[in-house]
Length: 146
Image (cartoon, rainbow, N blue to C red):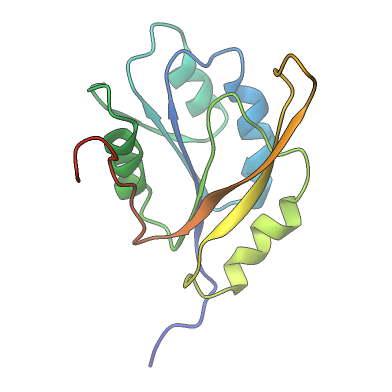
């Protein structure tokens, strides 16, 4: 018989020197996911220790100047049914219950998150990005043909 859930969720982050932001990210998402994986790509600050203190698992990756390779390594380490991919300087301002509801949804589609970039000179920039993935989704390197 095929499993029907609950499906496991994992926050997946690649990070380097995000000590200023990692607590805010993890505090905003951890109540809504089953797991969190921070893939540290060579921090010289205390990003890994701060992530562990918030309950995240930390793995390490030797940076090779390839975001797709790093993200794919993180996704492989995450090993959940649903992966919610965010950057170290992002956080969940709203939508926590929607993230938690993934536990009841079969992981057979890609979801989007609404991002608001407050660093733009002209004011906040809104965008929708594919950042909620079933376990088997991986990034593809646009420069190397992988």
